[in-house]
View 1 (cartoon, chains in turn green, cyan):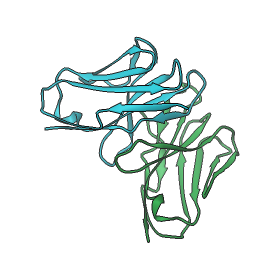
View 2 (view 1 turned 90 degrees about the horizontal axis):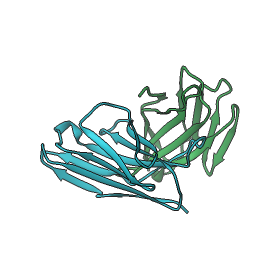
View 3 (view 1 turned 120 degrees about the horizontal axis):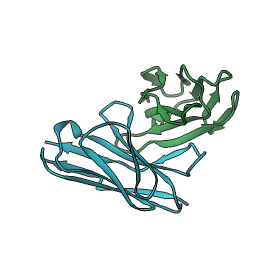
Length: 111
Length: 113
């Protein structure tokens, strides 16, 4: 199915740096979900957003549901080596409720 | 609490052989169930989803099929594997109508030689 536009595709950062990634769509979403996938494992749900403008934190992670309902971003503060993985955005479209996934942002953290 | 299991964890099969991957969910009833395939370094491709026993919807035409013989069991099958069937297969569950969060199993790594 159609994927969300997720960027950047990959990031190489130094431990301690902050990270920001985002997801955009041409259609309106009811919910935004952010997942993390480590090598050889299934994605794990990090944050779920339900309302436009909502800002939600989970430890060092913060995600926001865009006001237009067509975008979302995920920030990671003070990155650590265990933040390494692929981060996916996902959500159901308003009109058909089909779940869409971004292509993922591959994060590498150098100690 | 809910848990989701997949087996086997890894599988190496020759071209033309059959396939059966199993997914089971514990701790919830009447979940929506999903099969995804993930190619190396790529995003998730939805293959099948099910809203109830024997109710299967296919998202892409292919030589794979899915079945849901019990409420919390979802099976992915093939009669004859192709090289292009190699990938990482993920099962997921969601709480039903109106619940959007999907929770994924640990995955099965399939290599077709």
